[in-house]
Length: 133
Image (cartoon, rainbow, N blue to C red; front, top):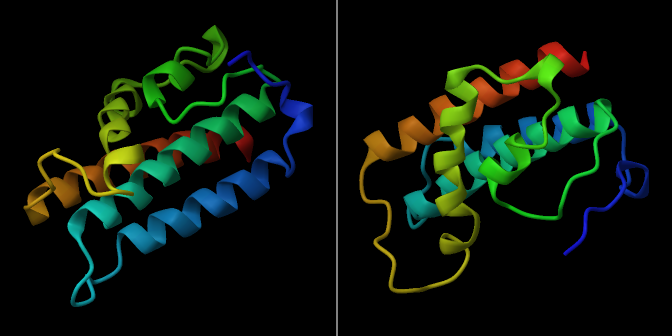
């Protein structure tokens, strides 16, 4: 799919960050009975994705419609290159689709994996906030 111009997307970079923060808060809630860890990690991925897109919108960079965080991070201009802790967040891409629907993939089974997804999402949010604010 070809890149879509940022001006075609609704919302300001700050609004995208607000949505990212909301996803992060959902990812970090005390796990309600019956809620799968994969679903909480999906919200961590969404937080990171929306935060990266906020940066790209702020920088007026065209980017493809994708949930692949590595692809989105490759669109970030040189002047605002992310630190290693943000680049590591590309690992969250695995939750973008697999947590939404049943499949043969191994589900997240440990709280440690969830905590790692929160750490990565938090790094992206902090980085994006510094750029967009």
